[in-house]
Image (cartoon, rainbow, N blue to C red; front, side, top):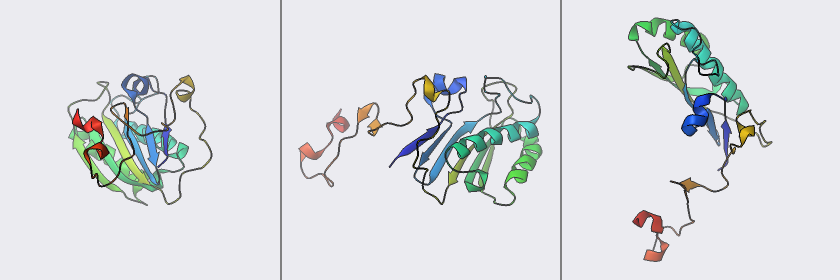
Length: 179
């Protein structure tokens, strides 16, 4: 199944080796999204409401790049550094999702990447339409040599070989699982 990736261009994507969002068929998975300005700095330090909105702005951009929007979100996971901020975070979440509420998990965590970040959000979306067939516009980070998708599935850097299922002889087994 074809995979489409969206990159936001933050320094962490390149350093860590991940994409902002990944579409596989009708599903879209969005990485944990912090209230970043795109350069590694925090938007609205000390303001959990504004930071939550910023997280969803970044998420919305990634969803749109992959042919979806916030109304397609079916799950949100919200990580906050202080549960006392929950009312402001919940208010921002409600404003965006009251008309089409997804399932939600909110947990308190000890810290985020920057000490002034108070919230991080990840989402999953389910789209009714199949992914766009035309190639997506390449973001700045993709134009720096990062591939949009792999032509062959890989596990731990090794290609997955077609297999006879169920395996009937020892030669039908992928020798990689015998390492």
